[in-house]
Length: 188
Image (cartoon, rainbow, N blue to C red; front, side):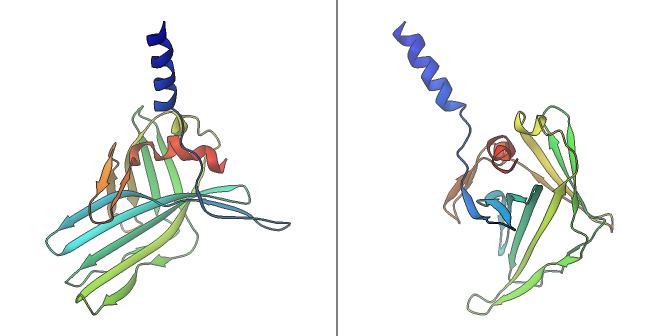
C-alpha cells in the first residue's frame, strides 16, 4: 500500500504542469499584457558560427501570440532575413495535428550588431506570430515535434524541438517539445 501511495505522488509531480513565470505582466485600465519567460528551443554551434532560437507566449488584451527570437553569430557576413505579412509559422504536433500562426502585418528584418572585441557579426531577429484558431486543446496535450517558418520567398526554416536541450554555452536546460503543454495555459 505504501508503494502505491508513493508511486501516486511521484507520478503526480512528474506530470504536473510548470508554474507560470512571466517576464513582463502589465495590467491596468487600458492594458492587459502578459509574456511568459523566453525559452531556448534551438541551439547550433559549429566552427565559428552559432545560432539560437527562443520563443515566448504572449497575451496582449486577449490576443494570444508567440514571440520568436533568433540570434546568429559568425566571424563572416550573415545575410539579412526579413519576415513579412505572408510569413507563416507551422507547429506540428506528435499526434499529427498542425497549427498555423500568421505573422504581423508589418515587415521585420534581422538587425546587424558588430562585436568588435570578438571580431564577430551578430544578427538579431525579434518578431511575433498570431494564433489563428480557437481550439487549442491538442497543443496543451501533445508535444510539438517541429516548428516551421515559411517565408513569402519560399524559403523554409525548420527547428526540430527536442525533449531536452542542454545548452553548455548558455548554461541552461529546456524542454522545447513540451513548451506549449507547460505554458499555453498561462496566456489563455
